[in-house]
Length: 634
Ligand code: NAP
Image (cartoon, rainbow, N blue to C red; front, side):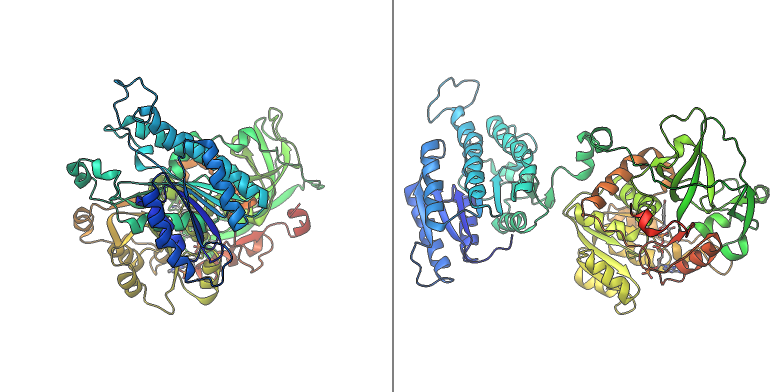
């Protein structure tokens, strides 16, 4: 929701502290506001200040620009009257901020009373009233059938324990989980979020021990709380979100995606429909074509050739025959063809020749062994096993990843998508509110990394070489695209990100790695995804020396982490499901390079094309051109 003049907002506890600051901030945008407060004096004063601001945007109003309503938020009749008056005056309610809150006046284990000085009062004001206000706001917003935003002001002590006031902490924890449980109201156009600041210099916080405040890094500037509220109002993707604001960590969403994953039910076990069988007539030939590596070389053309192989039937009982429709092209195809993926090295390597090439594909099941009961002929499936540059492949049924459709976009989500998803979660330990830099960002895996970092609530910087790539990255909502053909990456990072970058997803290597390492912030994490610039050196890929690396890391408590997808196979299906869900719901876009490559004979050209630096998005080979896009899109 854009903050614009003419909207209306109701803020409880608007007379003082955070509520008052939010009232004034909204008024400065020309938004009509109702100040709801228990204190006549504070409320009237805040309303008067806000009234002056709102009046700057509107003339000849037939209604007051700001209302003050004296109200005890624990009295549900008074509350209902306040919401009623607001809707009657402004014709609806666009924003509701429930901010009224008190510290606990008395220790809970000595107090058995019910009155205004009891600990129950804190629960009533901090939690029960928030529930009541949320109810009234939802009713007011639904009645007008227009989008609305509700912010329930929790506290950082609703995220972690506050030993000095367990009742306060408990009530705010209640606000947080209550609010997060309302995420699905987004479907009705109402976004409800929690705002959880640490201590701001207000009357409430003035009772805190100054030593404790100093330990927390001092009071939080009110500006950061206002900024957080603006973000929750304007960012349409935020619903059931909880924004934690602290001096120590800045603005950050809680829980992080990694934390959320620990308890979230997986749709695959609950809602996911089994993939539909593709109605195609699969003719099993006697022979099929595949690519084999016959000579170890980084030059894919000279390392490989297309051969005919016999289709050996019957299948082993636990095996599946997959007819391949699309195969994915990867930067590392040239590392595989040079033998780099086999450990041991030396003369041993040559003894493995010839071996099958290709890492990933989608297709349909063309045959199943006797003991495979969960897969049928025609089931769309993906594989991430070696030997995918082939018209058919036989794999153990445990390697089959059922997918909804045998589409090129699904191929892109395999090695490229999974690398981004897993590396950011496991190696980068990505949270939100950070600055994330992605190199080769318009490539196969980079495009996923930028989007996942954005979806997690980070500021994203992306490097690429070329106008088309820069266009793609802008369309993916990257905050700062650096086209190195036009701008100097080092200069941009130095001038615009002087504090450094928190997370770097680095896949270019060589000089780019050095630039990235120098741009890493204190505590930053740089994940080595690859080093494509090195793969095809004149004498092959030669390891580089990084002089002074340890000293740099030590001086800034930084981490350089490696990531290799094959070591995370046990997470593939879960992360693939997550990517497919994001894609199906329109939150994730998948760019497939438009240059067509048809048939097994085009694979080597496709590998060259990826390494030419010209590709935009994922490079895919259509192995079976007879399988029309109409069928593929199902
Ligand atoms: P990709 O990003 O689609 O690769 C193409 C892009 O890389 C090009 O458009 C170009 O982008 C850049 N590039 C190509 N050749 C280059 C060169 N000689 N020097 C500098 N940049 C060059 O390829 P991908 O398959 O998705 O792989 C990207 C990287 O991720 C590779 O390093 C790959 O090894 C790595 N990877 C690692 C894992 C893992 O498990 N660790 C898994 C998958 C991929 P710009 O010119 O726009 O920068």
